[in-house]
Amino acid sequence: MNNNDWKERLGVVFSTNPEFDYDKESETEEETLPSQQQNLRVMLDKKQRKGKKVTLVTGFVGSTDDLKTLGKLLKTKCGVGGSAKDGEIIIQGDFRDKVVEILQKEGYKVKRSGG
Image 1 (cartoon, rainbow, N blue to C red):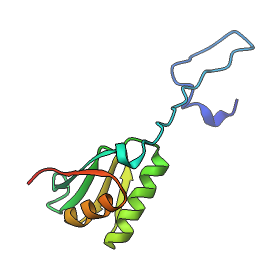
Image 2 (image 1 turned 180 degrees about the horizontal axis):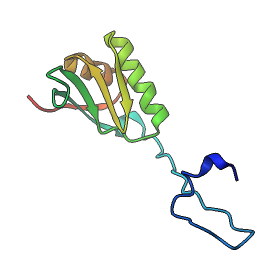
Image 3 (image 1 turned 90 degrees about the vertical axis):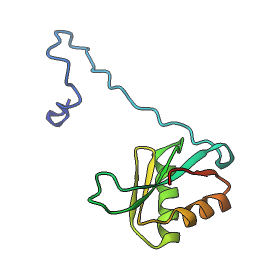
Image 4 (image 1 turned 180 degrees about the vertical axis):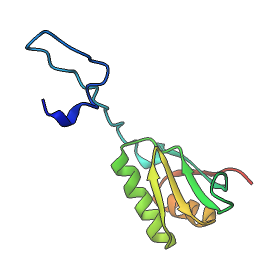
């Protein structure tokens, strides 16, 4: 065991068993649903962003790699920055109509929600 993995062993104080190996809880990635089965919601959000508007895409079910790929596609097509994490894609600015159009062309089921 490395000295650097102490954070992974939190909760285990001491073991007298020389064969003891700490079981790491490995997170299993969700399998990405096909685009026809995805139910995405596109909304405008200004909360906790100092009044700046962002387009928020929620409801994605799948791996983080696929989420980041979709986020990169949307950011490239809109020509702006953003991020993709925790099952959400954030696009800087109000691009709801454009994002809905792009996602529908990609075959996703999209609903525009909020105002």
